Image (cartoon, rainbow over all chains, first blue to last red; front, side, top):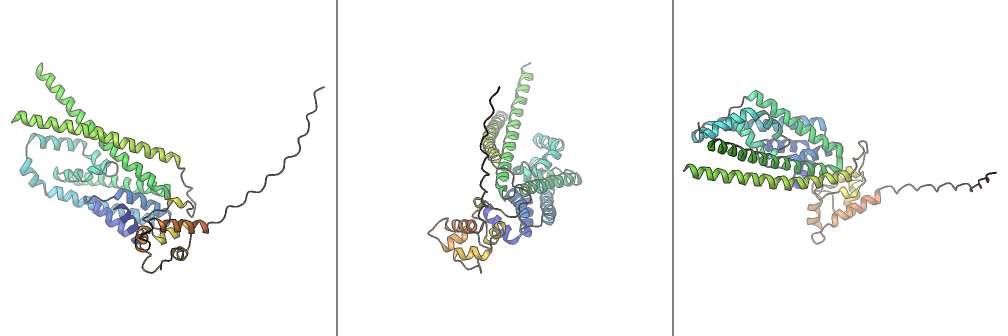
Length: 197
Length: 142
């Protein structure tokens, strides 16, 4: 898939990249990070104008994210019908209010596997739109300029960067899941100790 | 019912923790190997105009892209491949290979590499080192 898209980005230039990142913002699993890093390298080779490519890519991906947010926003009623006022839902809402900004920001570029669930949850929990947009746009700017910039810096060796960043993202996701699990087990232990007392 | 939910939750959390551990190990090792590869490759100079390392050619690249990347005329590459440029400029190396040389896997990329190497200027000869003056004997200490 990524090889096919790379050939098409060479052939059709920045407009294709804009479409791909927009569709990626909607949550369709496409190798967007690989393309963004490669686009930086293509800009260095003179195939893409880096400033227009970067600017319109940011606008495209944020637009895709906004649509995903709105899907979550308007799906709230359906979600509440199923989960409303359950302790789990209230807990999820409370922890999203606490950790939302960080998860919105970092899921845009570092742990992209959870980007769509975080966006949908932002809409469903009615996370304030302006605040959400601020963190979303900041994360996407880091993604496009930072990752694209690394592609530009490494030129024809961009695949090394892509390989490292993709695996690093997976590593962070693994650590997050592990920490979440350990924290849950720790909480159970505390509860059990309190009950036994 | 309550105990059943508790059991399910516990199984879910243990499953997640194990998954997290496995993901951490798997991606950690891969990230470490990727980082090691990084250290073996110095950053390319920012202002180099054309690429010279033919090992950077990939199957997804097109002839016009390679032509610009390596500074070799497109026509020369198409001539070497004996493929007409018309209708083939947007095809990747892999597609060209599949279409024109279906029984010779990897032939197109090899021809391209050979053509590029033939176009690259031969390395400038290193001038021979100046002959060293004959060693003067060190006067013996009185």
